[in-house]
Amino acid sequence: MLDRWSFITTTLAQREIRFSLARFRQETIPVGVNRTEISAYNEILFLLNAEKMPAGTRFLSDTNMFEVEQSATSDSMEEFGGLLTVIFPSPIARPISIEFLQIIRQA
Image (cartoon, rainbow, N blue to C red; front, side, top):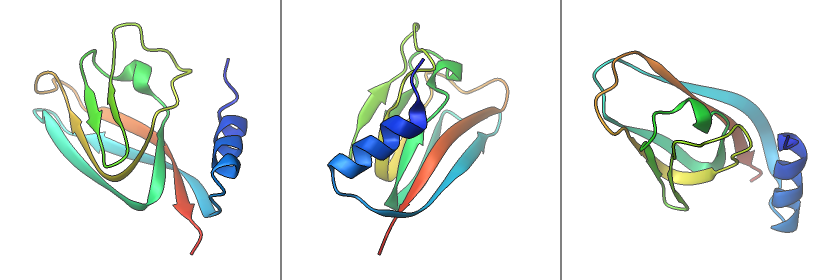
């Protein structure tokens, strides 16, 4: 299993990105929604629960594009920045929580 924190800190250090805050962030999407936007300006969001998203869910941001496959695992470490748009394959029938590790860049 992937050690997520080590992966994130190593990745940021390699890019010489310093951060002032790292915290858990959760976005709950209500029933009937098939598209939502999440602001991630001046920060990086690392998706933590891709395996809980419906297959075919697409994450599109200024820095990355990712589509959840049927075989998504908890080892996925996709990252997003800027404006993140999440598009579900159909309107969701039950609330879904999208979990991220939010990294706020140091000024």
